Length: 322
Image 1 (cartoon, rainbow, N blue to C red):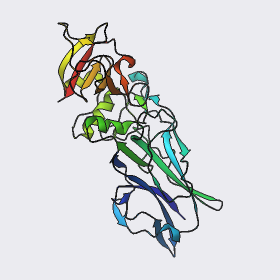
Image 2 (spheres, rainbow, N blue to C red; image 1 turned 180 degrees about the vertical axis):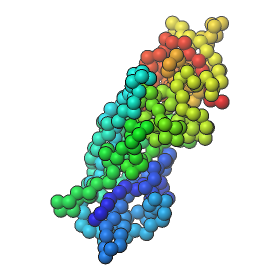
Image 3 (spheres, rainbow, N blue to C red; image 1 turned 60 degrees about the vertical axis):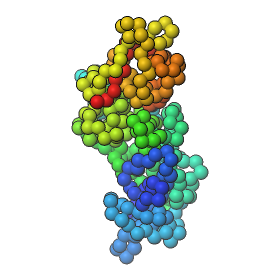
Image 4 (cartoon, rainbow, N blue to C red; image 1 turned 60 degrees about the horizontal axis):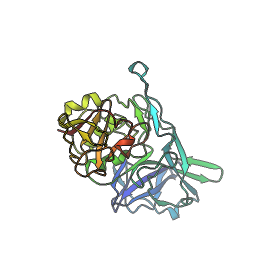
């Protein structure tokens, strides 16, 4: 035995070692892959019906023919729901996100398991949607070989892990809010950043701040917006309405007219914070502090009443991506 790794298959597609993105109505299966050397040649074992490694098709041998092993599965998950890259621009640095290996109960000895993205070390706001990373450990007598885990750092310009640690993202659906749910289970990162948009922490689902969280969703929908902060969002959005909260919890404009609850996915922009409208839960048809918005702030992303966001008493703008 010279290597072990985890691959993921979405429904009946070939299992792959690339990051997997699936909808909640799709099945994601994790398969163990064991590589050994026999007579100077590499032999690959897996129970995956079809397999691609490094983008190339591979014909594995069933694991029943592999050397005798004991398999153990781990989640590789953030230990905290809140982290920071520095309180001020002067203090900025890419902080290493603290990842831990947590055993997956009921998976001992199994060559194949169903992907479960629910976190165990931080609040589970997604209840089945979000992102999780996985590790496989193989024991052969006193010998232990594991696939990449918390040590596999991406390095410069990142606080996260390389794609050698298999990543699975399950989203609610193909809407803007649905794509945002891929970030569930990942930490709020004050001043999330990247050396480029393609290498941005949000792009690799390491975590995000409030503005980058929403830009991530727009980019997943095909937009080409650059990651930005709340002060940059007006440049890539159009203003729908603006106002302040009244004593009854309803937001009104300068004329005293209630702001409309425009549509789910529209941005709720406060000074230095932003979320996305999710559910019209208060007085129907108008924006009030009982409505739910999807956002991230000192916690992994979640849906929360505007009243509980910490920004309800601030002036608000309703905006929409252009």
